[in-house]
Picture 1 (tube, one colour):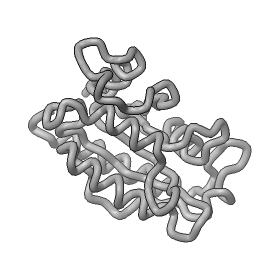
Picture 2: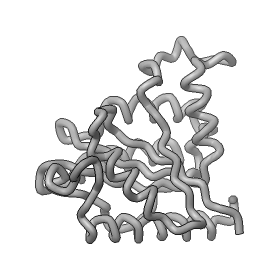
Picture 3: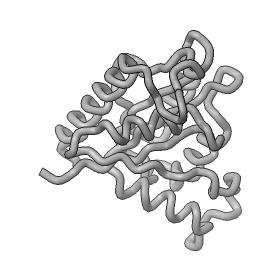
Picture 4: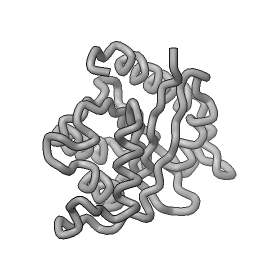
Amino acid sequence: MRQLKLAGLSGSLRRNSHNTAILRTLQERLANDIALSLLPLDGLPLYNGDLEGPELPAAVAEFRAALEAADGLVVCSPEYNAGTSGVLKNALDWASRPANASPLKGKHVLLMSSSPGFMGGVRAQAQLREGFASTLSRVLVHPSVVVAGVHQKIQEGRFVDESNIQFALDAIAALASEIQRDPAR
């Protein structure tokens, strides 16, 4: 069986991003038959329909190609003002084109979120779930992976809450299982 290739998207650009720390920690703990590559979002220009065409901006073309090559996505978002981050929304806007034929169509997606608050970013997940539905992505039906009080669970750039780590790893395993069962794959 070939290695499953997952693309990770962190909804934060901060150098010491909690969401990126979560993804990196999970990346190191995955089973050998699953690889998680983090895709950078900081080089993507703001979405502008005037830039769509045969010659996309280089960063957009690379991002879309990486999404196309991935078997599935693992998205970890902060919650800003009861929603997802602008950088993640921008990336999804670029990835959602052309409508109904984008690299996201049929792509299996696991949503995760984090927040210093007690709800762990669940409202950002609700917004993302709706956005991914419009791209015809296949968001994993699974108990929500949320990291509440995240500022206390990241130490020296590492996600250290073992119960949260195991829950997220179980969700990734469920995503992998769903991808492997997909007859369209």
